[in-house]
Length: 102
Image 1 (cartoon, rainbow, N blue to C red):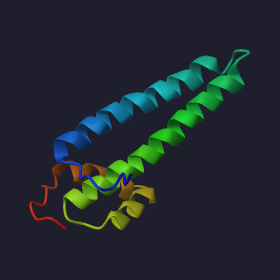
Image 2: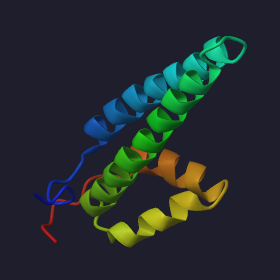
Image 3: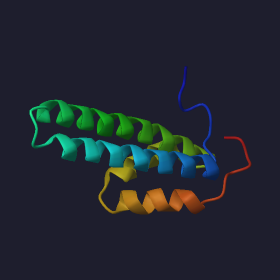
Image 4: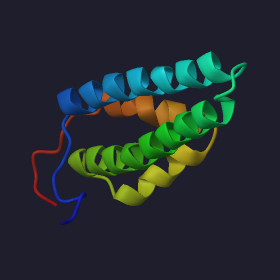
């Protein structure tokens, strides 16, 4: 099973971004809600696991979207650079899909 086989169009990428943002906000709320309780370690562990899982799925989504616009998935490494990653994330909303198969 190759997670990079299918491409991700603009609409799907925007939907994924919204769901991911809600997921990350939930992770932050879990960490915040449990920080002064007896379950602080559990809440922190769960929140960190959610953020790491979100990052892994995010890498797949960025690579698939980059392939859809006709660029190499390796460009996704730019998302790890501060501020450049934000610009790349926003740019992927507006770049049109490449109609040509790679």
